[in-house]
Length: 372
Image (cartoon, rainbow, N blue to C red; front, top):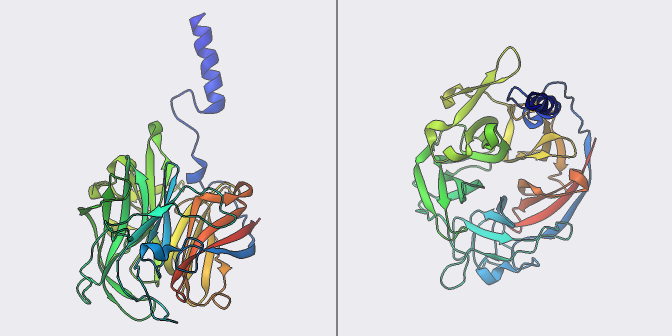
C-alpha cells in the first residue's frame, strides 16, 4: 500500500514539477519556443509630479525643491524611491541640478499601492532637523569625487542595498567619468548606511550602473540578475548574477559570457569575458518581468531618441527592437525611466514608471499601455 501511495505521489509530482527531484524550467529564464509579442505602446500619460514644491507631495518640506532619478526598492509593504543629486531652494527658472543644500542622494518611501492617481509619499529618510538626509556622503570635489549617485537598489537578506557610482567628473551631456561602482547596506530601513568597499567594480568597466531583479533559483532560494552599463549613456548592456545570500561577496558574482550549443547561458567568474546583450546607447536602464507579456521589459534613455522600451525572451536575450516609449519632442530633457513590478494594472498590460525631466529637475509619474 505504501508503494502504491508513493507511486501515485510520484505521478502527481511529474505533472507538476518532476518526480526525479528536478523542477520545471523557470519561464522567466527560458527563451525556447518564444516569439516577440510586444508590438507597440499606447496611452502614454503623465499622471503626476512626484517631487518638488509643485508636486502633491510638497517635498520642499524636506528641503527637496529639485531632485532626479527615482529607481524603486520593494521591501514588505513599503516602496522606496531612490533619488540622486538633491537640492534645496533654487533660483527662479533654473534648469537642471543646482541650488542650496546639496545632497548627493536621498530616499523617499510610500505604502501607496494605487498608482493610477500618482504616488503619495509617506515620508523621507530625514536628519535631526527634519530635512531629507544624505545617505552616502560624497567629497563633492570635481576630478576627485564629484558625487555618489545611487543607480538602483534592492531588498535582500533582511536588509536594503544600494548600488551606486562614485562620479569623478561630469563631462559633455551624456558623458561622465566614474571612479568605481560599489554597494552600500542599511539594516534599519534606510536610516543609516554602511559602505561595502569590498564589493567594487572599476570605473572604466561595464558594471557601473545597474538594474537588479530577483528570481527564483533552486531549493527555494533566490538569484539576483543585474543588467549593467558603463558610466554615461553611450554603452551597451551586459549582465551579471549573484545568489541573494552572496550579494556582499564580489567573488560570487558571475558574468554572462554567451550561450552553449543548447542555448543555455554560460557564466564566467571574469567580468572581462562578459558579452553585450543589448548593443545600443543606453542610459539609466530599468528591467522587470512583465506578467501580461510573460516577457522581460527593459526601458532606458536612448540619447537623441528619447526613452525606449525593449522586450526580452530571457535575461540574456534575445532582446527585441527598441520601441519609442516617451518622445523627447513632447518631453524635452527626459531621462531615467524606472519601472517597478509592483506598479502595474490590468495584469501588467498597463505599466507605470518614474521619469526625470531636466526642466524643472524633478521626478514625474507616467503610465503607458502595452500592445501585443
